[in-house]
Amino acid sequence: MRPVTALSPILARGAAPLRAHRGTDLRARSWRAEGLLRMFENVLEVGERPQDLVVYAAIGQAARDWDAAARIATALLELDVSETLILQSGLPVGTLPTHDGAPLVLSAVNNTVGNWATADRFYDRFASGQTIWGGLTAAAWQYIGRQGVLAGTYELLGAVAARHFGGRTPRYLRGRWMLTAGMGGMGSSQPISAAILGLSSLTVEADPAKIERLRAAGGLDVVADDLDAALAALHRALDAGEVIAVGLRGNAAEVFPAVVARGEAPDVVTDQTAAHDVRFGYLPAGYTLEGWEAVRDTDPQRVERDARASIARQVEAMLVLAQRGSVVFENGNNLRVQAIASLDDTTPVGGEPREDAEARILSIPGFMEAYLRPLFARGIGPFRWVVLSGDTRDLDRIDAEVSALFPQRPEIAAWIALAREHVPEQGLPARSCWLGLGERSAIAVRVNALVASGELTAPVLFSRDHLDSAAMTHPRIGTEGMRDGSDGVTDWPLLDAMVLSATGADLVAIHSGGGGYAGWMQSAGVSIVADGEAATAQRLVRSLDGDSGLGVLRHAQAGYPEAAASAAAGGETCRAPVAWFGRNEGERDA
Ligand code: NAD
View (cartoon, helix red, strand yellow):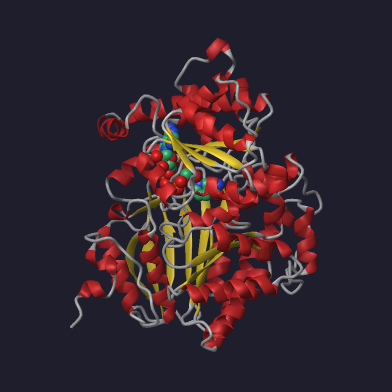
């Protein structure tokens, strides 16, 4: 008899390095459950601290604890397609009888009534094991490492380049550089995305192990221990017309002001430390990594105060660089929110009124409002697929299909070619690609047919980031500055989860923010396995078109003409009808 841990490495409860199951054999009772189990294993394979079930974003977890993780794995192995497994904040509660067109897994993570959705209450409940921060894709088992966000960072930097530098090709970006920080799960995508576009970068990271990991993955050309050496390497390359990615060991709160003091003017400035979490995610200036952990245990409030003060220093430096002409934006990590919160800890410098200081900080735009909203309005966002066989030939085949399927949008084939060349693999073979309404279902149905015909060796799982057209409300990230003022309205991600359940996705999740995102975020996630069955083709079309169709409706309702046009046209493929009723008389923009 096989040992029980052979059924899933999760059953070994973190005792050994975890690798997702690969191959064409089935451990669960259906490919739909098998696919979800492989994804659960995969987020731990590619996660930041699998031994603690931490996947990314400082403390974003895949399950409540190891006992819960093992019980989830066992439940997935035994689950029938006419049952639904219920997960509550990373804990398996039980199964309910449903039907074979219903989701196999329904999950809700850390959703809390408004008045109780505070960081302090979260940390208390987290410490006593009552909840987790599920990240966006951690507890929903959709994380594929930096590959997931890499396409988004590429889209973002491309939009920045098109807006400010004349175009989004190396021709316009050669000789330019970006200052940023953070080489964690997501942040490590920054230098790679920049290099693909021909933009050089200097990325600051406090943890030498993260620097070494990214260097080994081919994401850094040079690593420096001090700013002078880093700048010298950078300018040497820029002068020679080369593109370079420089990693600098240091603290962003110290390095950014030092860059200002040196009189430098980077072309682009941003940050992707885990600043959203001032207890676990942002190393305060003057702390060592070891000292940080120790003080966090004995005096967490001090750590939080010091982190906020450090973030404020970094943000002040970013504001100076903006005055010098750098393009400065926040990249989805609540940096500005934390800098504003620091105003409560200190007496204002030079007696500046609080509102003025807050307005100055908010003069830094959020990346979504400033650059990516026109794509979201058309339902175009971070879609992804994961090859469950683990066989890269399956990925090659899907890449070829996607490249041929959308001639009307040549940027899709261009991205696939770049991704194949530049994106380092992590975990099960996967691809992230920004697709819109109608495109996602078109490729999913095609792949389902290839699974049915045996041209792909095993089923393929489709998913996306929660930061998508309909799926997220975060008034400082996805929904900042909505035209109708609906920045904080969470009806949309909740409706999205209902649409996804009604249309028969395989996993539907509703997450709320934890830690520094507490009270700031609501999101919905979806996974669906193309197992080659005819009924699955229908569920793929309904759920994927429903998901991006709702995004188009949400943006049309908010007054975005691109969305109204998309609804009228039937999406990007003209074959995904969305019936939008038009705005009510009297509905106005904010
Ligand atoms: P992570 O916890 O894996 O990594 C954070 C990194 O920042 C770590 O390597 C840490 O050592 C480093 N760091 C912390 N403080 C530092 C400091 N003062 N100076 C230099 N380095 C420091 O987090 P992640 O998964 O990379 O996510 C980073 C942030 O991006 C999070 O806030 C996350 O929520 C956000 N995010 C944004 C998007 C997006 O679409 N824009 C997507 C995913 C995540």
